[in-house]
Length: 292
Image (tube, rainbow, N blue to C red; front, side, top):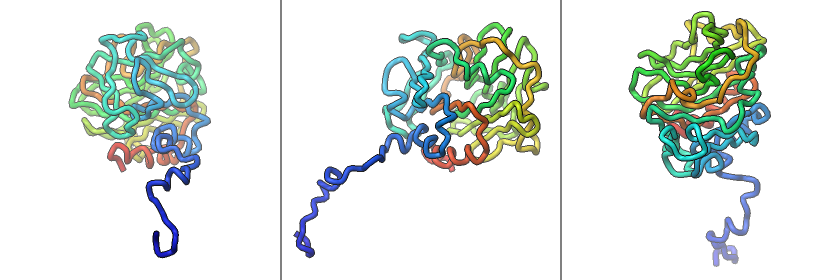
Protein backbone atom coordinates (compact mmCIF):
# COMPACT_ATOMS: atom_id res chain seq x y z
CA UNK A 1 0.00 0.00 0.00
CA UNK A 2 1.53 3.33 -0.94
CA UNK A 3 0.91 6.80 0.49
CA UNK A 4 -1.97 7.44 -1.89
CA UNK A 5 -3.85 4.43 -0.60
CA UNK A 6 -3.52 2.10 -3.58
CA UNK A 7 -1.24 -0.77 -4.49
CA UNK A 8 0.92 -0.89 -7.61
CA UNK A 9 2.44 -4.18 -8.61
CA UNK A 10 5.07 -3.46 -11.23
CA UNK A 11 4.99 -7.09 -12.26
CA UNK A 12 1.45 -6.60 -13.55
CA UNK A 13 2.00 -3.37 -15.45
CA UNK A 14 2.74 -4.84 -18.87
CA UNK A 15 0.05 -7.50 -18.48
CA UNK A 16 -2.59 -4.91 -17.61
CA UNK A 17 -1.53 -2.32 -20.15
CA UNK A 18 -0.79 -3.88 -23.59
CA UNK A 19 1.84 -2.31 -25.79
CA UNK A 20 -0.69 -1.55 -28.51
CA UNK A 21 0.79 -1.64 -32.01
CA UNK A 22 4.43 -1.52 -30.94
CA UNK A 23 6.32 -4.56 -32.22
CA UNK A 24 9.94 -4.50 -31.00
CA UNK A 25 11.14 -6.79 -33.80
CA UNK A 26 9.53 -4.70 -36.51
CA UNK A 27 10.73 -1.47 -34.92
CA UNK A 28 14.39 -2.53 -35.16
CA UNK A 29 14.33 -4.57 -38.35
CA UNK A 30 15.22 -3.30 -41.83
CA UNK A 31 11.56 -3.79 -42.78
CA UNK A 32 10.29 -1.72 -39.88
CA UNK A 33 12.79 1.05 -40.58
CA UNK A 34 11.80 1.14 -44.26
CA UNK A 35 8.13 1.39 -43.28
CA UNK A 36 8.77 4.27 -40.86
CA UNK A 37 10.69 6.07 -43.61
CA UNK A 38 7.66 5.77 -45.88
CA UNK A 39 9.57 3.75 -48.50
CA UNK A 40 7.84 0.38 -48.28
CA UNK A 41 5.81 0.93 -51.47
CA UNK A 42 9.00 0.75 -53.55
CA UNK A 43 10.64 -2.09 -51.62
CA UNK A 44 11.05 -5.22 -53.76
CA UNK A 45 13.40 -7.24 -51.55
CA UNK A 46 14.28 -7.01 -47.87
CA UNK A 47 16.71 -9.58 -46.47
CA UNK A 48 17.80 -9.05 -42.87
CA UNK A 49 19.94 -11.67 -41.14
CA UNK A 50 18.96 -10.35 -37.71
CA UNK A 51 15.20 -10.44 -38.27
CA UNK A 52 13.47 -13.69 -37.27
CA UNK A 53 10.93 -13.06 -40.02
CA UNK A 54 13.77 -13.26 -42.53
CA UNK A 55 15.77 -16.14 -41.08
CA UNK A 56 15.53 -18.56 -38.18
CA UNK A 57 16.57 -21.87 -39.77
CA UNK A 58 16.39 -23.82 -43.01
CA UNK A 59 17.65 -23.30 -46.53
CA UNK A 60 15.99 -20.00 -47.51
CA UNK A 61 16.74 -16.38 -46.69
CA UNK A 62 13.21 -14.95 -46.63
CA UNK A 63 12.12 -11.63 -48.07
CA UNK A 64 10.17 -9.58 -45.50
CA UNK A 65 8.82 -7.06 -48.03
CA UNK A 66 5.75 -9.19 -48.67
CA UNK A 67 6.79 -9.88 -52.28
CA UNK A 68 8.11 -13.43 -51.65
CA UNK A 69 11.47 -12.69 -53.29
CA UNK A 70 13.21 -15.41 -51.30
CA UNK A 71 16.73 -16.72 -51.87
CA UNK A 72 18.06 -20.25 -51.50
CA UNK A 73 21.25 -21.02 -49.61
CA UNK A 74 23.33 -22.28 -52.55
CA UNK A 75 22.03 -23.58 -55.86
CA UNK A 76 19.46 -26.05 -54.53
CA UNK A 77 16.86 -26.35 -51.79
CA UNK A 78 18.99 -28.64 -49.66
CA UNK A 79 22.27 -28.59 -47.77
CA UNK A 80 25.30 -28.15 -50.00
CA UNK A 81 28.92 -27.03 -49.99
CA UNK A 82 27.93 -23.76 -51.68
CA UNK A 83 25.62 -22.69 -48.82
CA UNK A 84 26.45 -19.53 -46.85
CA UNK A 85 26.29 -19.99 -43.07
CA UNK A 86 24.08 -18.10 -40.65
CA UNK A 87 25.89 -16.68 -37.62
CA UNK A 88 24.30 -15.37 -34.44
CA UNK A 89 21.01 -15.77 -32.64
CA UNK A 90 17.84 -15.89 -34.79
CA UNK A 91 15.97 -12.65 -34.26
CA UNK A 92 18.92 -11.08 -32.43
CA UNK A 93 18.80 -7.85 -34.47
CA UNK A 94 22.42 -7.01 -33.70
CA UNK A 95 25.77 -6.89 -35.48
CA UNK A 96 26.30 -10.52 -34.44
CA UNK A 97 23.70 -11.77 -36.95
CA UNK A 98 25.00 -12.18 -40.48
CA UNK A 99 25.47 -14.57 -43.38
CA UNK A 100 29.05 -15.83 -43.55
CA UNK A 101 30.84 -16.83 -46.76
CA UNK A 102 33.78 -19.19 -47.27
CA UNK A 103 34.84 -18.26 -50.81
CA UNK A 104 32.58 -20.79 -52.52
CA UNK A 105 29.11 -19.73 -51.40
CA UNK A 106 26.23 -17.76 -52.89
CA UNK A 107 22.48 -17.29 -52.63
CA UNK A 108 20.27 -18.19 -55.60
CA UNK A 109 16.83 -16.75 -56.28
CA UNK A 110 14.07 -19.20 -55.43
CA UNK A 111 12.22 -19.18 -58.76
CA UNK A 112 12.46 -17.71 -62.25
CA UNK A 113 14.12 -14.33 -62.64
CA UNK A 114 11.58 -11.63 -61.72
CA UNK A 115 10.88 -8.51 -63.75
CA UNK A 116 12.34 -6.17 -61.13
CA UNK A 117 15.74 -7.87 -61.50
CA UNK A 118 15.73 -7.71 -65.29
CA UNK A 119 14.61 -4.09 -65.20
CA UNK A 120 17.85 -3.03 -63.52
CA UNK A 121 19.64 -3.63 -66.84
CA UNK A 122 16.89 -2.28 -69.13
CA UNK A 123 16.15 1.09 -70.67
CA UNK A 124 14.53 3.38 -68.08
CA UNK A 125 15.99 1.37 -65.21
CA UNK A 126 14.95 2.88 -61.90
CA UNK A 127 16.29 1.24 -58.73
CA UNK A 128 18.34 1.35 -55.56
CA UNK A 129 20.50 -1.48 -54.22
CA UNK A 130 21.47 -1.40 -50.54
CA UNK A 131 23.82 -3.81 -48.79
CA UNK A 132 25.21 -3.94 -45.24
CA UNK A 133 28.46 -5.82 -45.58
CA UNK A 134 31.89 -6.43 -44.07
CA UNK A 135 34.75 -7.62 -46.27
CA UNK A 136 37.87 -9.42 -45.02
CA UNK A 137 41.44 -8.33 -45.63
CA UNK A 138 41.86 -9.73 -49.14
CA UNK A 139 42.57 -8.51 -52.65
CA UNK A 140 39.88 -10.48 -54.48
CA UNK A 141 36.68 -9.04 -55.85
CA UNK A 142 33.17 -10.33 -55.38
CA UNK A 143 29.62 -9.76 -56.50
CA UNK A 144 27.04 -8.59 -53.95
CA UNK A 145 24.21 -8.84 -56.46
CA UNK A 146 24.01 -9.80 -60.15
CA UNK A 147 21.90 -11.46 -62.84
CA UNK A 148 25.00 -12.70 -64.70
CA UNK A 149 25.70 -16.39 -65.22
CA UNK A 150 27.97 -17.64 -67.98
CA UNK A 151 26.52 -16.27 -71.21
CA UNK A 152 26.30 -12.52 -71.75
CA UNK A 153 23.81 -12.28 -74.62
CA UNK A 154 21.55 -10.47 -72.17
CA UNK A 155 22.38 -7.31 -70.26
CA UNK A 156 23.15 -7.77 -66.57
CA UNK A 157 23.94 -5.56 -63.58
CA UNK A 158 26.75 -6.17 -61.10
CA UNK A 159 26.92 -4.53 -57.66
CA UNK A 160 30.37 -5.56 -56.48
CA UNK A 161 33.41 -5.27 -54.30
CA UNK A 162 36.58 -3.98 -55.98
CA UNK A 163 38.71 -6.56 -57.77
CA UNK A 164 41.96 -4.89 -56.78
CA UNK A 165 43.56 -3.56 -53.64
CA UNK A 166 41.63 -0.27 -53.43
CA UNK A 167 38.83 -1.75 -51.30
CA UNK A 168 36.02 0.06 -53.08
CA UNK A 169 32.44 -0.72 -54.01
CA UNK A 170 31.39 -0.48 -57.65
CA UNK A 171 28.53 -1.00 -60.06
CA UNK A 172 28.20 -1.63 -63.78
CA UNK A 173 25.81 -2.96 -66.40
CA UNK A 174 27.18 -4.96 -69.35
CA UNK A 175 25.98 -6.90 -72.40
CA UNK A 176 27.95 -9.13 -74.81
CA UNK A 177 31.25 -7.90 -73.47
CA UNK A 178 30.38 -4.21 -73.88
CA UNK A 179 29.52 -1.83 -71.09
CA UNK A 180 26.00 -0.50 -70.95
CA UNK A 181 26.92 1.67 -67.93
CA UNK A 182 29.58 3.01 -67.97
CA UNK A 183 31.91 3.47 -70.95
CA UNK A 184 35.01 2.92 -68.82
CA UNK A 185 34.00 -0.31 -67.10
CA UNK A 186 33.09 -0.66 -63.47
CA UNK A 187 32.35 2.66 -61.80
CA UNK A 188 34.13 2.94 -58.47
CA UNK A 189 33.62 5.94 -56.23
CA UNK A 190 36.69 7.29 -54.49
CA UNK A 191 35.96 6.13 -50.93
CA UNK A 192 38.21 3.41 -49.58
CA UNK A 193 36.17 1.04 -47.42
CA UNK A 194 37.64 -0.30 -44.18
CA UNK A 195 38.02 -4.07 -44.10
CA UNK A 196 36.42 -6.33 -41.46
CA UNK A 197 33.96 -3.58 -40.54
CA UNK A 198 30.25 -3.36 -41.39
CA UNK A 199 29.38 -0.70 -43.96
CA UNK A 200 26.08 0.61 -45.28
CA UNK A 201 26.55 0.69 -49.06
CA UNK A 202 24.16 1.72 -51.82
CA UNK A 203 23.84 2.67 -55.48
CA UNK A 204 20.84 4.68 -56.69
CA UNK A 205 20.07 5.12 -60.40
CA UNK A 206 17.26 6.48 -62.55
CA UNK A 207 18.32 5.84 -66.16
CA UNK A 208 15.80 8.28 -67.65
CA UNK A 209 17.19 11.21 -65.65
CA UNK A 210 20.53 11.31 -67.47
CA UNK A 211 22.82 13.97 -66.00
CA UNK A 212 23.09 13.57 -62.23
CA UNK A 213 20.76 10.57 -62.21
CA UNK A 214 23.05 8.15 -60.35
CA UNK A 215 25.08 8.19 -57.16
CA UNK A 216 26.84 5.94 -54.67
CA UNK A 217 26.31 6.12 -50.92
CA UNK A 218 28.44 4.90 -48.05
CA UNK A 219 27.92 5.21 -44.30
CA UNK A 220 25.87 8.37 -44.25
CA UNK A 221 27.19 10.37 -47.19
CA UNK A 222 27.73 10.44 -50.92
CA UNK A 223 30.57 8.21 -52.04
CA UNK A 224 31.98 10.66 -54.56
CA UNK A 225 33.30 9.94 -58.03
CA UNK A 226 36.18 12.35 -58.40
CA UNK A 227 34.80 15.53 -56.84
CA UNK A 228 31.22 14.87 -57.95
CA UNK A 229 28.38 13.58 -55.80
CA UNK A 230 26.46 12.27 -58.81
CA UNK A 231 27.06 11.12 -62.38
CA UNK A 232 25.07 10.50 -65.54
CA UNK A 233 22.70 7.56 -65.38
CA UNK A 234 22.25 7.08 -69.15
CA UNK A 235 22.60 3.52 -70.45
CA UNK A 236 24.21 2.80 -73.82
CA UNK A 237 22.51 -0.02 -75.75
CA UNK A 238 20.54 -1.41 -72.80
CA UNK A 239 19.27 -4.96 -72.75
CA UNK A 240 15.89 -6.57 -73.36
CA UNK A 241 16.37 -10.32 -72.77
CA UNK A 242 16.08 -12.15 -69.48
CA UNK A 243 19.11 -12.47 -67.24
CA UNK A 244 19.78 -15.29 -64.79
CA UNK A 245 19.31 -15.69 -61.07
CA UNK A 246 19.46 -13.22 -59.52
CA UNK A 247 22.37 -14.18 -57.29
CA UNK A 248 23.76 -12.76 -54.06
CA UNK A 249 27.40 -13.32 -53.16
CA UNK A 250 28.59 -14.27 -56.64
CA UNK A 251 27.21 -15.61 -59.89
CA UNK A 252 25.85 -19.13 -60.04
CA UNK A 253 29.38 -20.52 -60.29
CA UNK A 254 32.03 -17.79 -59.99
CA UNK A 255 32.99 -14.37 -58.62
CA UNK A 256 32.13 -15.53 -55.11
CA UNK A 257 32.48 -13.36 -52.04
CA UNK A 258 35.70 -14.10 -50.19
CA UNK A 259 36.18 -16.37 -47.21
CA UNK A 260 35.48 -14.37 -44.06
CA UNK A 261 33.03 -11.93 -45.63
CA UNK A 262 29.83 -11.08 -43.75
CA UNK A 263 26.51 -9.95 -45.23
CA UNK A 264 24.09 -8.50 -42.72
CA UNK A 265 21.32 -7.68 -45.15
CA UNK A 266 20.38 -6.59 -48.65
CA UNK A 267 17.51 -4.50 -49.99
CA UNK A 268 16.32 -3.73 -53.51
CA UNK A 269 13.99 -0.82 -54.30
CA UNK A 270 12.19 -0.28 -57.61
CA UNK A 271 12.91 3.44 -57.46
CA UNK A 272 16.00 5.62 -57.27
CA UNK A 273 16.03 6.72 -53.65
CA UNK A 274 17.26 10.20 -52.88
CA UNK A 275 20.16 10.92 -50.57
CA UNK A 276 17.62 12.11 -48.00
CA UNK A 277 15.84 8.76 -48.25
CA UNK A 278 19.09 6.87 -47.68
CA UNK A 279 20.00 9.22 -44.84
CA UNK A 280 16.72 8.29 -43.13
CA UNK A 281 17.45 4.56 -43.48
CA UNK A 282 21.07 4.93 -42.40
CA UNK A 283 20.15 6.96 -39.31
CA UNK A 284 18.27 3.96 -37.90
CA UNK A 285 20.13 1.02 -39.45
CA UNK A 286 23.64 2.35 -38.82
CA UNK A 287 23.63 2.25 -34.99
CA UNK A 288 22.85 -1.47 -35.01
CA UNK A 289 26.27 -1.98 -36.62
CA UNK A 290 28.20 0.64 -34.70
CA UNK A 291 27.86 3.20 -37.51
CA UNK A 292 26.87 6.81 -36.94
